[in-house]
Length: 309
Image (cartoon, rainbow, N blue to C red):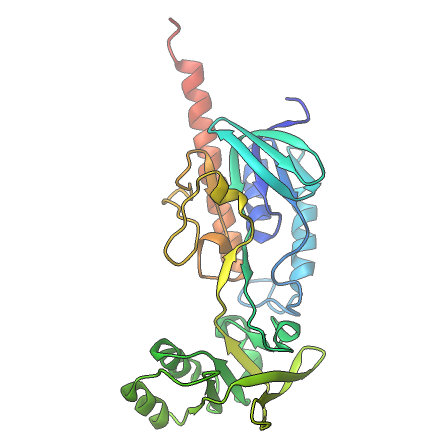
């Protein structure tokens, strides 16, 4: 096999991509990981709910994982960004921003998603530190403290009731007129959850650690953590350009083998699941790597046993 041809090209080298590469490398396949080095959790100080790695910095986990994966001679890494993909199952052509052209029998998108931040000064700087998305990832560290939820509508009310497991000092910031139904408002009142409709002007923080919410009327409310449910988009347009379908929620549509709507192209990690965590991405990547390897083995065996004509 020459230097430009691989069994699998993995686009995205974070936890899902590395996990898939490990499975494929141990299955004796030639793999190229292409990664631009911009993980979505680069500001997050600690990872949680991952056995043996609880409390470890995400970058440390990724660095250790990469070293272990690259021990396998069939696994290679290219620090670059994929800008286009063409071809069909069995022969995909991949072009990178740096001008590299490589080919693969199968592709795996492990590219994650890009969160779309609201125009609230201070929010982006706190994202992943004290502005958080998941109580299972971060809730324990903010147990019992003044906490906010930036959201609106009945779904926000239900989520606030859920977050009450971690704190009894919770405020829903609707960032404008509330559209929470009367029934849900009463539910929140019974749970002693406050609703603030005044728009949020900015977040006051110290190196990403929240201190207070500043409202448009000048009010300042002390706060230590703020949950948000951000809209997102796929991290790369390349997968849609080649025909991979998305779900109504915006995730890549996959079947039980993690294959997308395009034969030979697979997806793993945050780009195809709302369960955003390091452990979830690792599990997703492992399954994708196993299914891809099984398909490659099946195709190879068929080519060897097919009758000659």
